Length: 225
Image (spheres, rainbow, N blue to C red):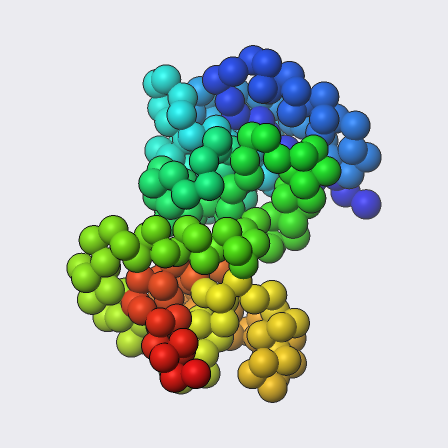
């Protein structure tokens, strides 16, 4: 089994040391580098080729949001998991919008941080349905009218089935649950998700979920039921 290549980015040396100690004990994770600021990230990514970057948000020169946006704009970009001390910080939302695959709290138990890195490396977002709903409610409440109009214009590119899948992703459902709920195979769900990402020029499922919430699709679904 090929080890997951992990890059640690945090301006606090104690945090980096703790993460390095914790992650270094896992047989399936290899720490390929560490950075103390977002300004160092792109050069380190070029040199070490990580699969996942564990990224602090608040750093002195280049913050994690800017570093994430720069990374996710690249071809063959690594997945990014944001490190934060807040559940629904506005900067976390911005990081998710520019392509982060999810976030973990700095006081998260070690086993859960390890699981988060493994999930992201496998292509799954790191957002539980509960946290997803909390974040989306916060997102929709900020400049909601403008974002709703723009989101609906973008989602017009989807067909009816793709729109249903987008709503299910917005609810935080995994592919198997979506397949059961919409009476299709898991492979078909994956195909729809891939088409949605391509049509809307999005990076990952988290961005699909954000767009679905921005457009008010989940509110409409609740009203229908």
